[in-house]
Image (tube, rainbow, N blue to C red; front, side, top):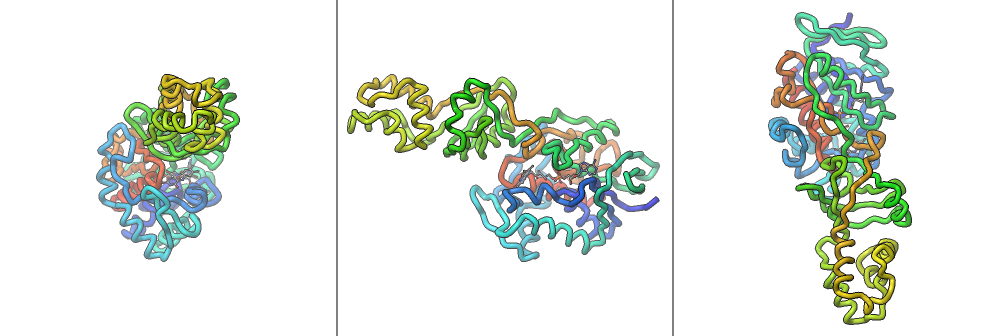
Length: 392
Ligand code: FDA
């Protein structure tokens, strides 16, 4: 039976950060992962360039049953700390938009950095290793693997959530929490494209591939970003963001020309040239296919001169206050993250250790802390992983 100070389950962003930090503190560390390669989600993230953090990361960018839980970790290991680490490895990066930092080269550089940090601090990595059983011992834990066994004083669960099962996501971390009697909040797919009921989808079919800068709102949440019409429904950053706040049966409002008073613009266009078609006037602001669909849907395919103020106001509403009820979401198959997770009331916010089970830690996505789109989720992985790394 191999003995370690620390066993980390999950060689993802959080697990590798935690392992490197624990190794730096002189702990003997084993990281196990059932996948064939470490950091697979890092590798595919950000279109292959990994949006590794956000310059503006702050507690208000996170959703949790206890919104103040993330404050301590985010303060102790900030985006500036991770940027300093990136720079120490000479990795070039740039801000794309809204504080989102991406590698200039490839997300592979981030995986390599974490592997180099682990190697430098003597961390062992065992891939293709599934955890079959976890038992409590008087002074730690005993783990049975598909290819061996180990004992450790500290066990760190960094197994991620349920999103993208094809990449090995299992929800195993929630089962371990349950095994030790810890509560888990409701989990659901988040940062996920939304689907539409068949008649709306049929009507919007010609728009597949069309993108606009929009504002998506649901309740008090509001995201001004791009949105995209797809063959299955709606996607793009504004939709992914709002999906984390949407619940079944709720309405989403889309403004597809935010900041433009469409009624006034159309009235002006009518006064100037009443013989132009509505869709032509709308095309000055919106993609042609969208302008045409709005004109057709509002039964206003004639000249502007034929349209009353009331009709123009209706069109303004269709553009800037389009309300719809999504049929659902694309689910874990395409969701970037899992909302919900190990209840933060069970954990110490400074160390991520379970209050009732000394030596058991939960970090990263498995915890009920979910970031917005834009590098916030990786920052949570770095911050929570680093915090546990100082304590194990
Ligand atoms: P993560 O899922 O990364 O790692 C968990 C590890 O545990 C995996 O390696 C898995 O194989 C392993 N594991 C699971 N069960 C196991 C078991 N039973 N036994 C052994 N090992 C097990 N975020 C962001 O901030 N910027 C971005 O650009 C993106 N982009 C992005 C794109 C796509 C397509 C997705 C799906 C997600 C993103 N994200 C993102 C979200 C980000 O990937 C996510 O928040 C982090 O990877 C979470 O890190 P963790 O280490 O917690 O879990």
